[in-house]
Length: 72
Image (tube, rainbow, N blue to C red):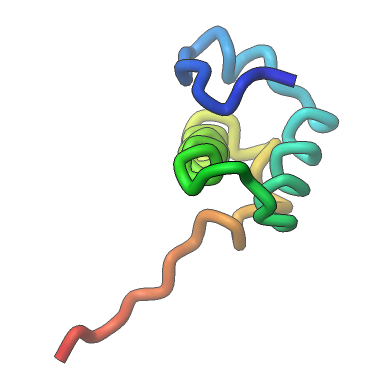
């Protein structure tokens, strides 16, 4: 497993497969990170997968979707 702080590169995204995407999604679902920054790093990685490798992230899009909200 790659370090959460590892840079998101095209090569890293290309190396992802279904098993790796599922493991990433499970970490996000469990939300048991040593620091909030580790969770945010995984969230950014899943978001990058959703953009660049949507076929892998499609089952987990609920983890990156954000509901619009009204601040008023």
